[in-house]
Length: 132
Image 1 (cartoon, rainbow, N blue to C red):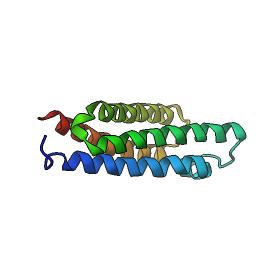
Image 2 (cartoon, rainbow, N blue to C red):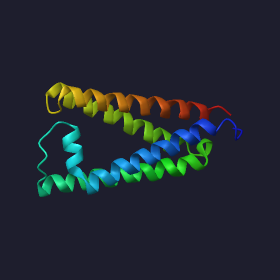
Image 3 (cartoon, rainbow, N blue to C red):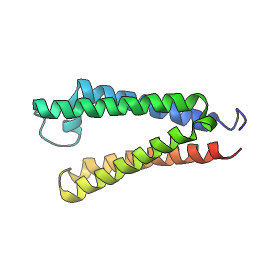
């Protein structure tokens, strides 16, 4: 793959890494904002704080993977595929939460739209890296 063809995958992966860093740090440092944006009660118990800490660490690990993959997208197709699968699983879990009533419909729909946008961008990036 020529450097010109790697421009979109690199840009998408760097943008995704930045997005994941922001989400990961906010989950660890400001879990109340996650609850507030989801339209849920904003009281954070110690157990819920631990859950957000684990979620933040997971997001930061995905951010590191996205950053690593952005350096040489055609050589890191597996990492891109893992990122894409994580977005599909995020979509499915959010969709289940909305249908079960655990997540209000309006913020849940917004989260689903964001997940679909990132999934689409990652899918395009992955497909472009497969063309040699």
